[in-house]
Image: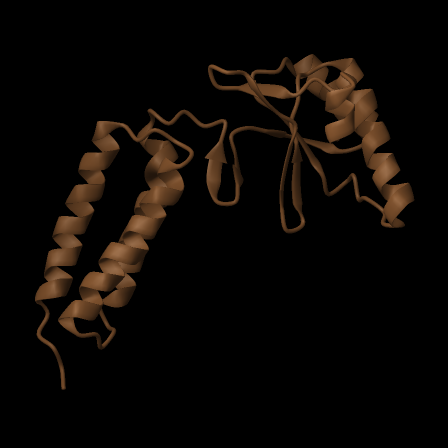
Length: 181
């Protein structure tokens, strides 16, 4: 894929003010091929994936693969899914737990993260932890969830107020619980 981008056979998605090209994201067995919605890109993608099959001896299951277009005309998506022999999916979608293609200004984009917050705090209520242990759980785990989301999305102030409200309501109540012997 890198070579295809390098020789201008695949047009990647350009990110940021410096137009950094992004054509491939991989984690474990998840792979995202990212590029412009163009027929040339489809041909190149099909060739790259076929080359992978031939070199590795592995067989890709295109029917399990999804073609996801963000701001791409439906006609192109239908043609591309037939060409690649895979199913279409409408965005936004989740990759590694983060919403891709979602509007970060909407509260609905942040609802899953807020639900994780509430769930984590709620599940710790029945743990036998010292006061210091409770503080560590709140600071380390909840902050890690926030940092993970904030590494990708800009959080609106309305969501931040909700995070603070959840932390205050649940964390202070949880921290005040008397230690049990």
